[in-house]
Length: 130
Image 1 (cartoon, helix red, strand yellow):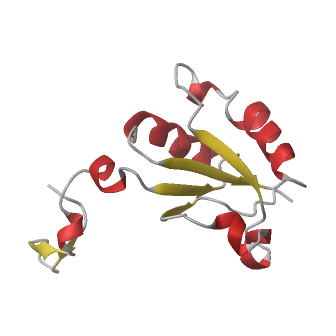
Image 2: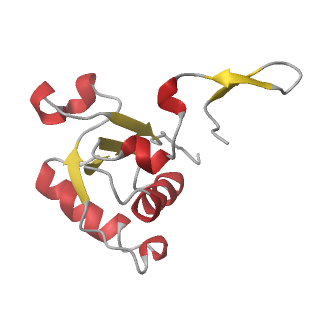
């Protein structure tokens, strides 16, 4: 059963939200471009690893990482994210990195720099342990 449904107070599923809600997540995202924020954090790494496992038909998988430029973001992806145990046995080739900041206007990117994104999964957070 699809989880994208409207549920009334009694817990009874009344109808799908839309016809697009029918099908698996992999089927619905096939060929789409996905942007993930927060990929360097605990939750973001788990979501990214799950995307690599469960969404083989994605058209593009991009992560937004804080870095001075796209090259530094790619280096951070390789060193800080994909080196994690969560990615053992997974092919990281489909993942690309863009430099950006969720706190900045337009994510710190030009509009052309984020063109073609169909779906965003937002896992970024600002955490302070002080």
